[in-house]
Length: 97
Image (cartoon, rainbow, N blue to C red):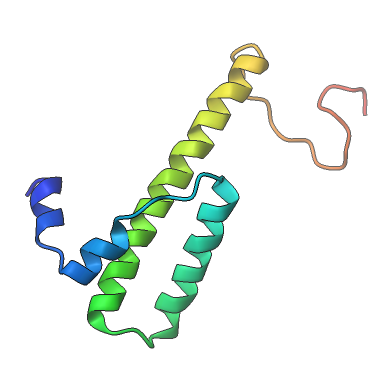
């Protein structure tokens, strides 16, 4: 089954919920995704609403992952091709702690 045939089998409510404009900011997409997860976990949605929310959540998750990957690549370029570990506590790595 191809992605296009899967998408065409969605109900109109599910298809409409999954479609739409993904927020331009990562933080907005993540906030919407978190809200969708809370609604899904509440168990108060109809089957069609659940399917639509799942489709929308999948689109938001894909967008967030793509943005994080792009940022990671930019950091690697800035760090000379090497992704360096995050040092918690405000001290940069290799500063002589």
